[in-house]
Image 1 (cartoon, one colour):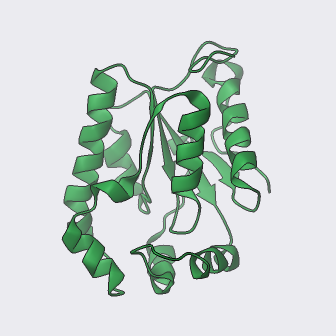
Image 2 (spheres, one colour):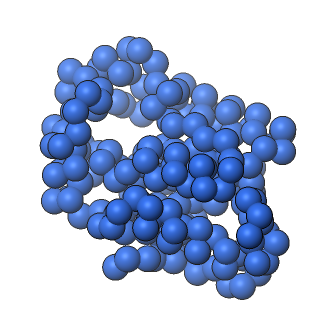
Image 3 (cartoon, helix red, strand yellow):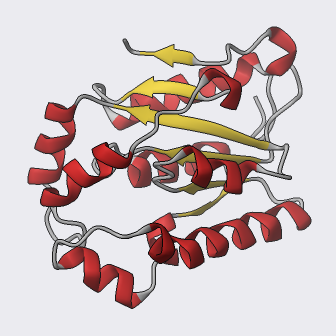
Length: 190
């Protein structure tokens, strides 16, 4: 298939890859964008230096801390949509309200949720070095997490497989497209 095209001829304009820290958003998002030949932006690039410093010292962000971050991500998405540029963007989007903000008025955005067990997430974060997000904050993210529901039409992919396999699963689910009855909560790898 040509980049940006499926068997149904309908690709989303944007893919929003969500999940808690350690779920592989950055890796999967960049690999997915590379495979599709689309633009890519990691949500970490939208954090202010103050927010990065706050998290680095072990303090979780509040809803008010996340407000300008979500606004910046939404603006980037709007610029991509206006430019008719297909893109992948990552964001933890832990709460339904955050996802609603990022999806509202943007019908061409597909939500991909990277799901993993607490143990797997913890082990991934423990092995990650040089990132501003400490493993100690995982519990605060899991406490805030409101997993995507069927009415959000997420593609749910388990993270207990290599990143390339996750990307292959996402592309496979995308190829099904809405015309072929893409499952509202498609899950791969369970």
